[in-house]
Length: 206
Image 1 (tube, rainbow, N blue to C red):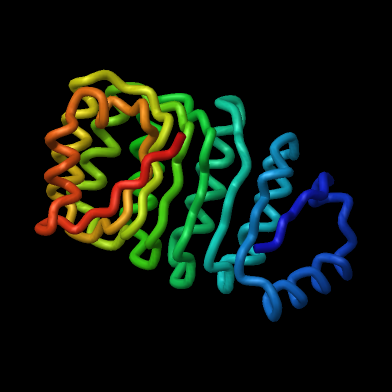
Image 2 (cartoon, rainbow, N blue to C red):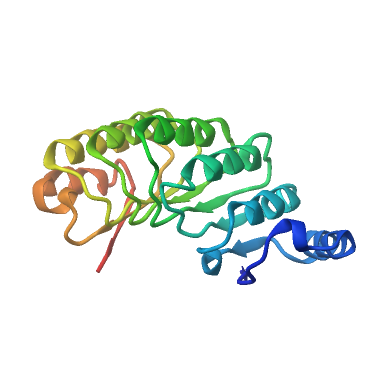
């Protein structure tokens, strides 16, 4: 995993540096952590993500606030559409502005057939947006690992999400928090999920 932590904007980077950067990373790097770019302009990602699209297998994007969510969503869309190598995506601690943006994000994810691991830990999803996530999971047949720890939702939303996970047949590993509504309000359903029939490994984060 390479940790990317510089802060700049695409207009200030000479073309020769861009070319050298792309050539080097395409030959040597497959995993990228952009966590320290939290305060950077979205133009940085508009430059970087297309440059690594054809060879990056693991990508962790930084926190983005709701003012930047529309631009970041478009960048993520461009990055994922036609992407045939990405297997792991992390967008933890993120805040979409509306249920329409959440729906668009999961539509983009749905159309990608190589992604195996999705981390949306601490992301802000309202209860109606949990239903969008549930619909995605019920139909998805490629994800094997999902981190939804520390997402706030009520008892009913937790039930809807559990039912969707029960319908999913590709998931092998699920990360939730110890204080999660799943564990507090639906302990029997969790036991069923981790039974020998489903073979889903549930990992409780502190």
